[in-house]
Length: 240
Picture 1 (tube, rainbow, N blue to C red):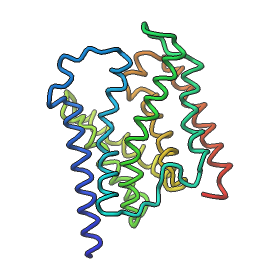
Picture 2 (picture 1 turned 30 degrees about the vertical axis):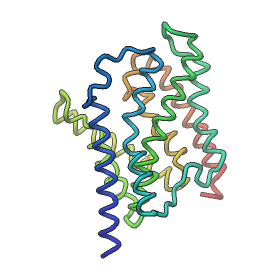
Picture 3 (picture 1 turned 135 degrees about the vertical axis):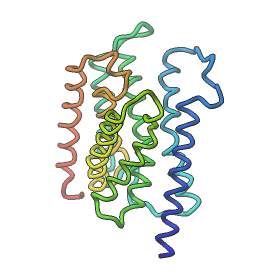
Picture 4 (picture 1 turned 180 degrees about the vertical axis):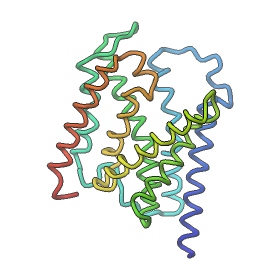
């Protein structure tokens, strides 16, 4: 019971850190971006602060409470997990992303790097810490718990929305949590989980991609990534 209570306290503290930073950065509480008008590339990477909450929460809780984590960045995939993260970057570099600031292919590389970093920051918290913290629960239970907390963290319900829309968003994130959670459990890799995390962003959950790449192009990128990722996981099946 004592261990259970300590675990719940750790989870609560993690979520408070993740949620509070989400509010600060998503709603610019301190007005940092009020007169913000830097280079477009800086504007893109500025959004990374929105994903800092889960990352910071995971690092703080792990260090303060000396939490032993089974899921690491490379996991049991080792260097293969780095190869997984390189695939979307390579795809976007080859295809190129139209813009008015620089070469389309260079821009594709930068966008690819941005989305990979964003995924890593989130997954360090959601799967790397929280799901690992809930490992004593059955898989379906921990996936749903992570999915619900993940949904709340996005704060979509604070904008102009409807109950139907919010139910849809919540179901998408819970379903995604099951898929990503399964990958994390099998690979023990935050990087592998991050790869599958960014599928939603590429398909259109991120306005950046829906505005600059046609749906057909985004689907092609996702199919290429998933096929290669699953192949890597299959080739490593003796270890996972």
